[in-house]
Length: 484
Image (cartoon, rainbow, N blue to C red; front, side, top):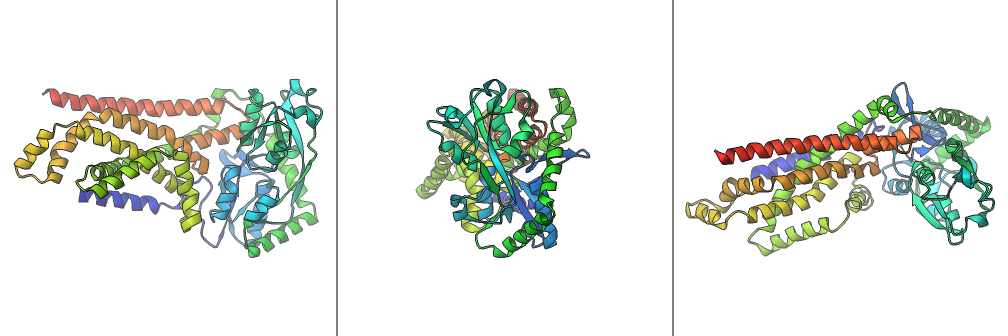
């Protein structure tokens, strides 16, 4: 038992010491270093920021990124980009995970209460995206009353949508998801900036005649409250860029880059062209799942022993641990681990660290119950016989009870391992570059709504199927030893 605890502590230390650079695709240095400027952005907003394959490598580009580069250059710092959901930008800034956010964000009173904003660097108008067959249907904003409308969560467009009478709003984080909702007729319109809308226009998606009253919006750069030093540098950079229309030139170049993303690709073309993305995603998914399985197994075993302790206090602690973790969604646990600890204790875990810890503690609660059922399934007489032979309780548990219990619950443990691989996809929401993250990136690059996910599903199936077969083989080997 002591050896197990020592191994667990050693492995946990290794995870906590993993460099932040392993957690994201783009972070290449210590995010807390004074020589780095960490940018938070939601890279699905062309031409502001979006993924682009350049020389076979995935890059986040756009005129927001160019502005961030200019700020970093002025500071003499290295720019580190962290891609995340638009709704996660403010928590990331408030918790100190990023130094600034640039994502076409419009300052409003609610946001100003949480963070400080720079001077405006770009102004855009709001438009309504609809399916081409509905173009004549929505000529005024009144025509949108009572309709199902898509908006980006936490955006200024969400506020515009809330002002439309009886509108049923669908708020999502990614623009690609909203366009997919429009294409599949789950929403009838999407409110979006005109600069962004241009990237999604084709023969099926058009701009409607209806125009929001609050048509103009200005984008600014967000920094943490009271960070006046950084704000002064940002405002000085924006002023310099505006002198010779530098920002307008950046917008034109980014728009050209974004327009190059639209090509006709079938699922096989996407699988081959973006094979490096999926390969990288598989690597991170396997690493995340393997560490989650190891820690989940060891923690679950310890919790089982605590739950079956002779001391009531320990039993209560073990029961509370299992019930709390089983009774709360893993997504909530992930948000608390990644953002809550940073906000309350200043503990900035990388996406990999947050993901491994969340997967481990979540799966350990389920594994603890599986182990407990296995131990209780072993005949009590065996423990009594071992004790009568002079064995300590811990020795009898380790050498007699646990081996039998683990063998009897092996199928259930295997199911839990498979579940961990699939549920690891949730970690992509905080920027972990796993298979799901890569599929989202490819969808943003190709504007293909379905193919990247079908490929991702096929990869997950192959991984879980192979694991299932390996576990079956292991079970047969154990069964063979019983028959001798």
